[in-house]
Image (tube, rainbow, N blue to C red):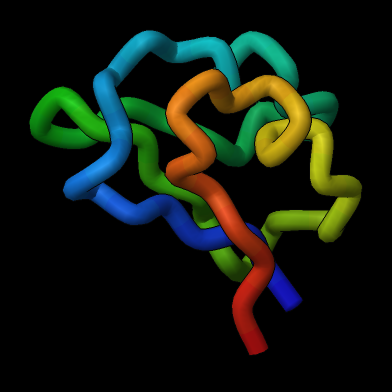
Length: 58
């Protein structure tokens, strides 16, 4: 169940990029994007996001 970013909430602060232990989050058009194939479901990005823009999806 990889993390997914709600682009309407993401401010582009990059806190999640810094928090990701596997470096699978990148910035695309000013918003975070999680590579779903490499996400290890650790939820570090969810804890780091000040905008509550990241959640786990099925």
